Image 1 (tube, one colour):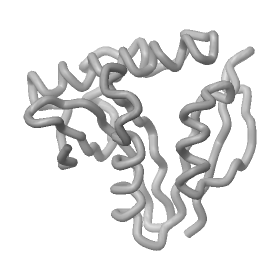
Image 2: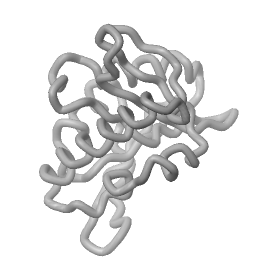
Image 3: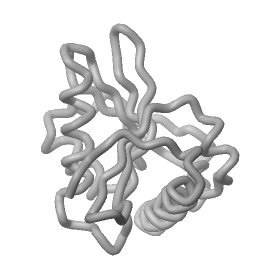
Length: 150
């Protein structure tokens, strides 16, 4: 597996990224029992319009996962982490988050996931993130916010 910077504006790569994003968030929707996750319904145009920095994980030349974040001088906010469901349990998500952690340097890193998404929560906790709070983002849809200190 290799990890490299990617740009969703890149035609076929953007379409592959969107397909993985939809598949990954469909798994999360099933886990949490709610499909109102905004990236699950995002179009390619909406995905490309997000002002995010992206890394892709590749198995050969096939995209199998990606992570995207925004950043300031003080913090890095992981906006999304997606792994092709056919590539789950191979360490791809952890490798992507560790790469973001390396690039963050001494800045705080924050991330959120569905409160009932135990696999994602376990990943973040295993990587040293601490639970900050549970938030009801829309009626009945709860997320858990995590932070990894600077």
